[in-house]
Image (cartoon, rainbow, N blue to C red; front, top):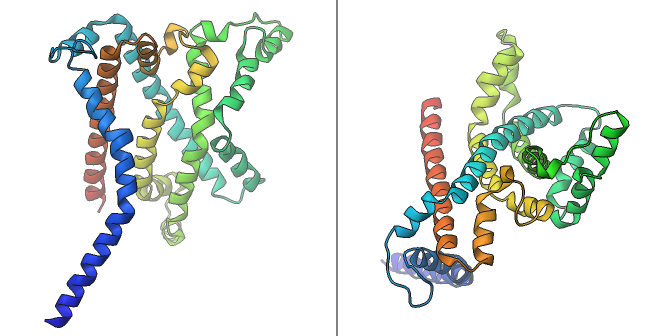
Length: 294
């Protein structure tokens, strides 16, 4: 009985100590994330941020009818559907290459990881010099006898943003895939090789199966990072870029600049709800796939 009381007292002391350590983080989360998020939902249901009246989902209906918002939403979804598969395929292929005894493997690892530590603002000038109408890329095209292209004022702008996204995010995914590959026991490949399994069968039946948790995590992070491409696009093309790269973040930023808080908060909550539902669906699929594999 005495030992039980001592254990309960120790548990209470540990719980109090843990609460003391967690309190600053919880307070910061509530002040800078949770409370503003709830306030944003509240303002999205009003017709004005000052002495506004409750209008329900009228702001959401009006926003969904807005052609500019629909254009931004389509562009964002199109970009995500394009860049995420490319990012995953390229990063997995490079991870498989770097996981072997390849020439200059360590140097290549450093090259692919370096964009993670380079501030985006310091690289934007380089991208502008490359893709400007009078930039280095058009100079090369002129030397080859080809007409220059206004990269940021045509449909090519989407390709430019895609290249910038891949340059920034491939290294992070390579690190994750390398960690997953190095956790696969080499004995499985040896047994499969003895049984006569070829490279493709070993890749499908061993590598992809054991990389399932890593692949889902990379997939989710790639989707989230695709919604962060606004920073690079804004620094390269400005507030009102070509219509093909006008994203939801551009729309929300412009609504903020014009002090239209109703459209801003409504668009932000729609995007947050979409991302949340997508992540939940992906986690459910991951759990079912893991159960089927097990």
